[in-house]
Amino acid sequence: MESIDWSNLSFGYMPTDYNVRCTYKDGKWGDITVTSSQTFEIHMAATCLHYGQEAFEGMKAFRGKDGKIRIFRMDENAARLQSSCRGIMMPELPTEKFNEAILTVVKKNERFVPPYESGASLYIRPLLIGTSAQVGVKPAKEYLFIVFVSPVGPYFKEGFKPTPMVILRQYDRAAPLGTGRYKVGGNYAASLVSGEKAHAMGYSAVLYLDAKEKKYIDECGPANFFGIRGNSYITPKSTSILPSITNKSLMQLAEDMGMTVEVRQVPEEELATFDEAGACGTAAVISPIARIDDLDENKSYVFSKDGKPGPICEKLYHKLRAIQYGDEPDTHHWVTIVE
Image (cartoon, rainbow, N blue to C red; front, side):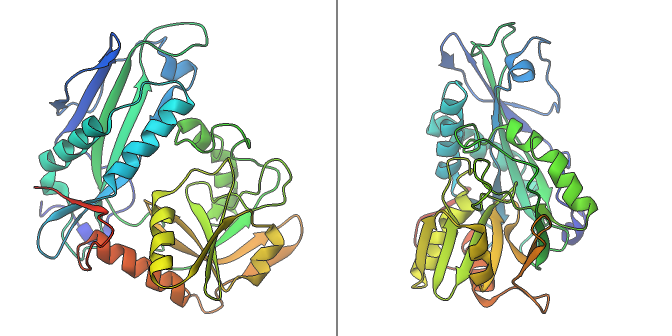
């Protein structure tokens, strides 16, 4: 793989050797198959195209200093996909079948797992879609599960550096009792207009307020939000936030460090009291926030004046990555080593 410049990879799709697939038909899941085809045929009346029966996950595999490949919190991704399935009436993929698919696709594409200390990783994308042909809003009878992989660099081109974010009150990502807590494509489609507007204005992401009252912090579109105040790690609680596996992991690490973890509603004005703030998710791990501008209210909440991440963000970021790469003990049994 000498032709790949591992240290300068962007976060995007790169073709690899294989992907794996599994179909649901006649009320049961079939066997996992391996293919090198990057396409598949789908009926024009498939439910995923018309009624949004589609859910996906995002995971990563890392090559350690010892050469071993580690996958981070695989069972948590399986559980979250099952939650998404329940949310939009798709059959749940058993955890064992999910894990088999992930391990198979990583093994088959082992040569695409970036080397240790390259700053890159192997992104894993499980995808589940309704495929049976029908017109009429009801769940499909047949489904296709696919997992493909791609080596990727940092999600934000700045890497682990503070970036500015913006509150755009005229946009909502998800309704309070809608599909916000599921990882379905519709939530991301709903964030495209506001996200592109933010990028055009020089911001890395939108920080959404709750759709009902426009009073509380929700999330950063592709990531969960957290704030640090003193010895407290504070992250919003809301029925429209996708539960981030990275955030769950950071909360545990914060507790391990002796911090108090608070999961609750966070009013916007509380932003003024935070020492540090960040967005967290699989793709970026932690993206420190330099400042948040509320343009409608003509307010700016500043967390980094020197362009550097805060000390707690830095400690949490390096701790989590050390576990992912096998540089520190995996005391919580989060890592699966690919044999």
